[in-house]
Length: 110
Length: 117
Image (cartoon, rainbow over all chains, first blue to last red; front, side):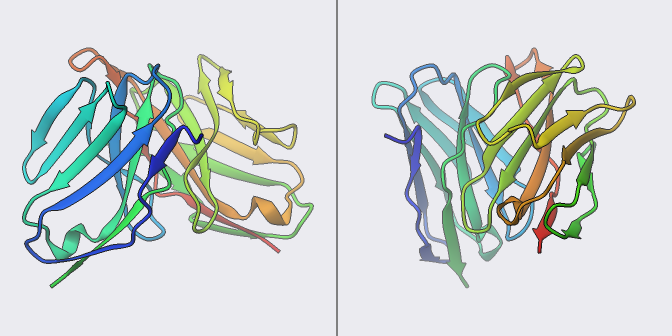
């Protein structure tokens, strides 16, 4: 079983839609859960993170973790064409390396 | 806003040649990382570095690879004898402990695209 599994997409939605991006993980040692956004041929950009079960909101973005089921979600409200990118979930433990999912490619159609 | 920088943005080299990829981490960060991403694949960890020594490395980071912090600002990745399969984007990241969150938030550079011919 892969440590981090992520729906690969691509996911195509109309502008204004609510987007749900998901990951599952297997390693119980993961303490926090990062979401990165990556535009084509660019470096991953830290979007937000959470480190406990429950929700964390930042503007149009909400990160959700359920540690009991090892399930991570990122919701984007009122999606914009500029949100079109690949979204990477990346759980981590302390200062150790992050373990990235394969990424979900999102396309928001104007 | 502080950011991680990397040079060059694109490096083309012939198989068997040595390459050095350079990174300038965020100035107050103490933890440094190299990751790579083969085109169309996921970001993979190579090595982490702290206090002038390797903290952790992956199976990918074999004897062909080495890292160094030659001065107070640069962090380098050297590939001694490049292979075709080393063609990838190489990302440097740095982090520091944030007592407010209790986390080590890793910030990534824009990457160096390495093409081995």
